[in-house]
Amino acid sequence: MTQIRKTGLGKGLSALLDDNDRVQPVRTPVAESNASPGNISQIRISQIEVNPFQPRTEFDPASLQELSDSIVLQGLIQPITVRKSGSGSYQLISGERRLRASKLAGLTEIPAYIRTANDQQMLEMALIENIQRENLNAIEVALSFQRMIDECNLKQEELGDRVSKNRSTVTNYIRLLRLPPVIQASIRDNHVSMGHAKAILGLEDVDKQLYVHNEILKNGLSVRKTEELVRDIQRSGVKKTGPARKEPVSFQLQKIQDDLASKFATKVRLKVQGKGKGSIEIPFMSDDDLSRILELLDW
Image 1: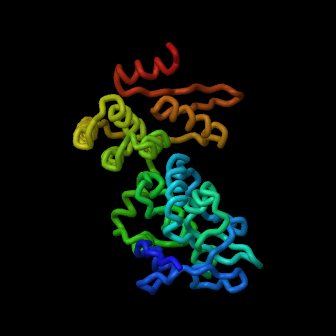
Image 2: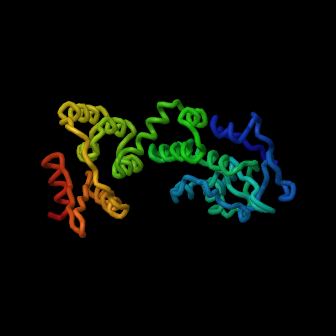
Image 3: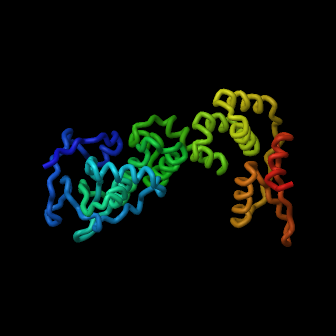
């Protein structure tokens, strides 16, 4: 028999899994017919279905291979978590990365906790496990928070309790989803930090947000320099005399507008006049910004 060392699951996930044991039980192979909630059982990998609520869609191949090599040498240290989904079959709750790495390692069986969970609990468990990953970027955290609010019907205070975060932290992450797609992509790809993003959010105008974003990438601005730039723009900004009227834009045109905005890293406006006529407006914030846009147009 092999003693399994318990690893921390975090307050939120532990509460959902109802893990009251402080010492993990010894893992022993359990026949499928005897597999029951609360046990750690050896389950055939071929009988495990992936979690349909898994918020994570990308897994780094190099990282998976590294984990697979470790499993070959030392075995799988932390069991996955599943629920019964039918006679002799199981549905993954958490641990898809471990499951994939175990397949790469050539395992046919894997140690698993068996839990009883409904669909909402499945979603919460998957999202909380996803949030607790150390290498999660800020946009992935924000999207997971928003899904828990929307799909699990949680308020921000309740969400904070689930993931052991205060409300202001939750709010700061969710605000990132208000930024233009091109800035969200930079945060996702670690070109722009959370501190940079919070400074950019001090500007409400999308054109100005995109201008600051471009300055960060072009000049390697620190968070402090970014905050100074935002303050300068706020002080010199011109107040609007009245609310601007927006013409309705179809879904297809909105998609084109968003794609162009991402390409040029500035807010693009499609002005439709009817009968297939209209214009495309690409604003710029400086001579350098104009030169950058012209280069993208191969001018």
